[in-house]
Image (cartoon, rainbow, N blue to C red; front, side, top):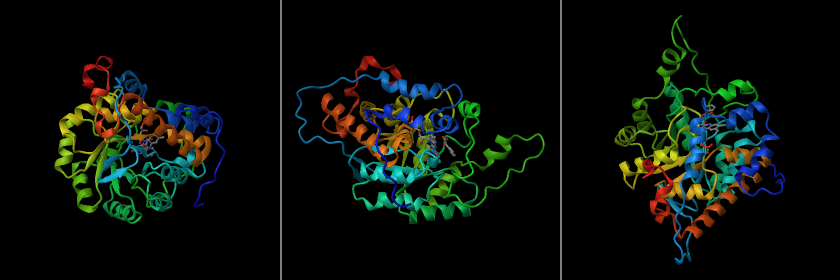
Length: 376
Ligand SMILES: Cc1cc2nc3c(=O)[nH]c(=O)nc-3n(C[C@H](O)[C@H](O)[C@H](O)COP(=O)(O)O)c2cc1C
Ligand SMILES: O=C(O)C(=O)c1ccccc1
C-alpha cells in the first residue's frame, strides 16, 4: 500500500464544512465522538471558532496587487503557503489509508505535515511522498514524552533517519482531558489500529493502595524542563513546543534552546475554559518579538481565518479536524481538495483586503471595533 486509492469526490463541496456530512456517513459514532469532541463543556472548542468569526476585516482598496502571493518563510525555508496539517492520532480510524493518504494530499497541495507520534501508519511510508516532492511543505514529527530515555533516543534517531525536519513536543496534554463525548459514546481504540511507530511496551503503573493514578502514576512520567534540555542535547533537529500559552513558559523555553511554538489549546481537547488561540497569539507575539517562529491552531476553517491569524502575528497555521473529515469523506483526493479550497479562499481574502503578501499582513487589516481589548 504505497499509493493511496483514488476515490471519487462527492458533488458540491464548496468549503471545508461541506465535508462533514459525507464524513459522518462513513465513520462510526464512537470514532466521530473522538474526532469532533472537545474537553468537558467544550467551551474552549467553541471559543476557538467564535474568536476567528468575531474578528472583522478592514480592507484596503485600489492597491496594486500584481505579483502578490501566499509564500511565507518558516525555519529557513520558503513555503508556497502557510498551511500545515496538525498532528492527529490514529487516522486509520477514518480511512483505510490513514496518514498515507494525507501525506500524498499534503505533498500535492504543497502543504506541511506534522505526523502524530500516535500515527497508525509507518513514519517512513508517510515521509516518502512528502520528501519525493520538491514543492511539498515541511515534514515534522510530533512527540509526547515517554519516560524511557533509551526508547526516546531510538525514536529520535528513527525520526531523523526518515527525513523529518523538526520535532514538535506537545506539552499541553500529559494526560487526556475530560472527554465527555468520548465517554458517552463509549469510544475505545479498536485492536487493529495501533501506534505503529511506538514499539516497546509502556511500563505498567505501579500504584500503592490510596495513590492517585494521575499524580502518582502518570504525572511522574511526564516531561518537565529537564526533558526539554535532554531533547535539545540529544537531537540536532529544531524543537517546537505545542501548547505553550504563558509568556513565562515561552521565555524559559527559548532560554533552553527551543526553536519556536505552536500556540494551541489542543483544539479545546485538553483543559477546558482556556482562551481561544486568536486571543493567546497577539500577546505572545508582542512579548517574543518578530523573529521567534509562532504557529497557531484551533478553529481555522476559512481562508479569512488564515489571513486573520497571519495579521495577528502567526508565521503559519495548522489545520486540524477538517482535513480528517475530508479524509473520511474521500481519502487522498478529499484532503487535497480541502487544501485547495482553503488555499483559494486565502488568495481571495488577500486580494479583496488589499494584502499583497502575508509578510505585510498586520493588525491594520483588522477592524479595531470588532474584537475585545485583549486582541490588541
Ligand atoms: C482526533 C484528534 C487527535 C489529535 N491527536 C493529537 C496528537 O496526537 N498530538 C497532538 O499534539 N495533537 C493532537 N490533536 C490536536 C491537534 O493537533 C490540533 O491542535 C487541533 O486539532 C487543532 O484544532 P482544530 O481541530 O480546531 O483545527 C488531535 C486532535 C484531534 C481532533
Ligand atoms: O486526542 C488527542 O487530542 C490526542 O492528542 C491523542 C494523543 C494520544 C493518543 C490519542 C489521541
